[in-house]
Length: 269
Image 1: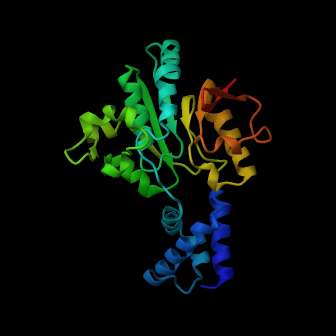
Image 2: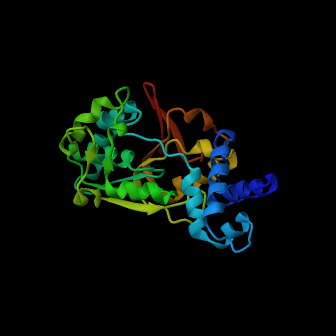
Image 3: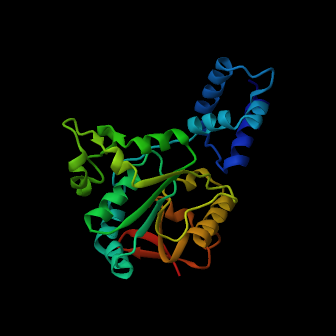
């Protein structure tokens, strides 16, 4: 595979998903492509042309190209804020109505299960949604089975007690099929302006995803999230390391930046 063909494939990934692979990821992507070329019958087509004609193959490539690292109760301080302030406030306003939570870049699901478990522990009726562009990680989310690596000793430990009823002797986590069904799973490309996002969400987590996007794509995604999905007064959480990348030039006018101690987040006006 020559450099022009590889550049064409990278351009296709960016145009279809908004993802701009970092240089550190390109070697892995190239190795995967060369492996796939030897595995499948391209019918005499270049791989880039084959991808344009075959959505299933494009999904396979995207599954390989996206990095999906997560664990339970990641960035513990955000969960502390939810437990101590935001969840109780929303619960008081909603009464018996359901709190709606969307993990918009859910990866393998540890994030949405963490959010659901925390809301459940506070007696809050909850509707939960998990979405990702990667179908493989959504399948893992649907199974609800996690190795001990999904729990970290350096972060999230304050809330590990919420997993106790689902842990095995080796500290792996296994949610029952009935419990897993409480989370609605959706394949969503956040950069697709025609994608159907969950509506009227009170809490949206979209962490560790903006690192893949250009500034303009970040602006477009924020506009769509705020205008189509986040309800008035609702909260949007990014990774704490991503906050600095969100300045006034891409922040929707109806979204304000808030802070509580060292925790920064956004609220729809």
